[in-house]
Amino acid sequence: MTQTTDFLAPSRLGSLALPNRLVMAPMTRNRAEDDGTPSPLMVTYYAQRASAGLIIAEAATPNAVGQTYPNITAIHAPRHVTGWRQVTDAVRKAGGQMFLQLQHGGRVGHPATSGHTPVAPSPVPLPETIFTPEGHQQAVTPREMTTDDIRSTAADFATAARNAIEAGFEGVEVHSANGHLLHQFLSANTNRRTDAYGTERTRFTAEVVEAVAAAIGPERVGVRISPGVTVNGIDEGDAEEIYPPLVEKLGALGLAYLHIVYADPDSTLFQRIRAQWPGTLIANPVLKDFSAGEVRHAAERALAAGADLVALGRPFLANPDLVARLRTGAPLNPVRDRYLMYVGGAAGYTDYPALDELTEEPAQPSSDSIVAFDGERVA
Image 1 (cartoon, rainbow, N blue to C red):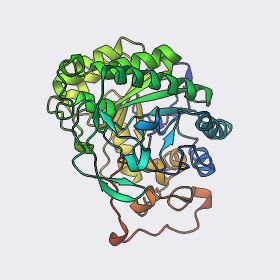
Image 2: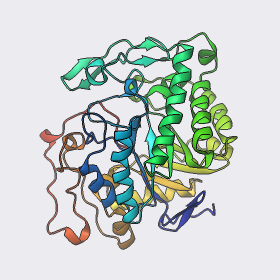
Image 3: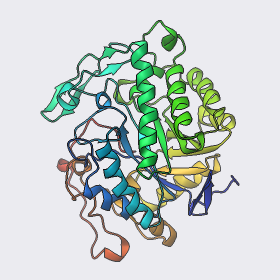
């Protein structure tokens, strides 16, 4: 891509023409039905945000044991495909295009939620409680995956990718970040194996991505990584040594993109990955606040450092017309009560107004209304 700091300029992602360089980051919002099927409310939510250059839809589990929290989406049964098709049809009708993130929780899961004992590279439990339909519970010790488990899980990712294409997505993003299963294999404190998947910690991520690319074509596949991020009890300790070999492996596959979470454009590792990665790089920057000025500054800084596209989470969460607001210099809606990020219903989900709907400044939440949630962090 031609380097520019204009995040509103058109761009391309493989064969896709993007109207701008702003990507809606995948954000778990817990609005699916109990069985993982996307709800009608989700159709409205994503269609409202179709002006993004690309939407990466929230994490969908490739199999039942991979479920993390209640009301998380899935993509391993026909009903899931049908539900997601309603979403992609609505977004396409509104002029947008979507990838779907595929996420297996690994040890980030609980039998009270999924009905299964979680699996992981090693029997190391999550060092904190986890939210379930019965409230917060102590995390359980996961079952160490066998070689057969590893192979069948890679196959499940490939099947999920085919399901995503059938559901109308342009492609998928393999989630190897934020403390979930693939990231657990990358991290020394969660991967204590002595076999090839322990001595070569990048192996499982590479095999999953290869399986997905073989299933739907590498040009339809992106990968998300989070070097050095410690969410969900991760402590890699050696990100500078782990990620360059992983990026080299993935770079040889001809993938659609590489997506870096909490990207710091000034870091040596970011610059090294940019130099290594041969294709489109998406940066998900850390924002100091959620003002229009800060969003502009962060996006321009990421592009100046070599990113091709910029992924934003909360700004899209609170502003269905974020692109129009940034184009016109309009102020952004404030992100309301954090509790509303993860509960069912339209409040804090589809009721954020667009500019032409705004009649008064939305109320700011009081400090005592902010409720912590231990799920996937909304970037």
